[in-house]
Length: 148
Image 1 (cartoon, rainbow, N blue to C red):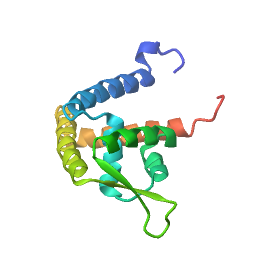
Image 2: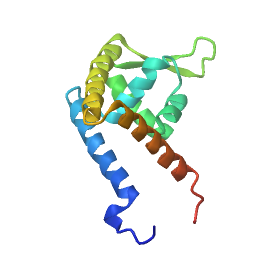
Image 3: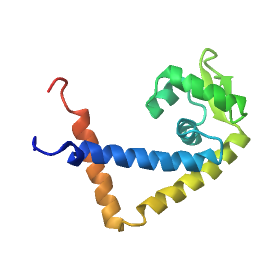
Image 4: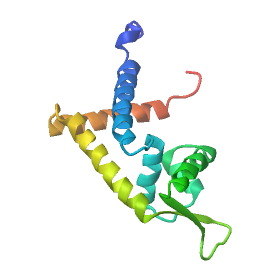
């Protein structure tokens, strides 16, 4: 496999797909003045209201510093609120505001529509196969030893 031209390597196909799909997602979210990072945080909060910034950062696979920056912008817009935990006062819970939940629902509906549109050229079986194959590639990348 070492003689495959760089333009035909799997990594190139994965990168092009990621770049073009993320650009499409960014265009959709621009309508809501929202970044993909903000949308990810709101998505996790919609399922896990009241979690901490550290847990939110873990679930979004970003550093705590990056998450705090994202949360600051969301808080300025009135989309989230931070409150001390009722029992553990040193912990700060993060919750969606009513405005945040409503904006997220509208943005998420548009992202879901984009997802459906991107899958349209594929059959249901092809979509399932693509997801399985991408999971396998991601797992292989995770298990790749350093320096090999």
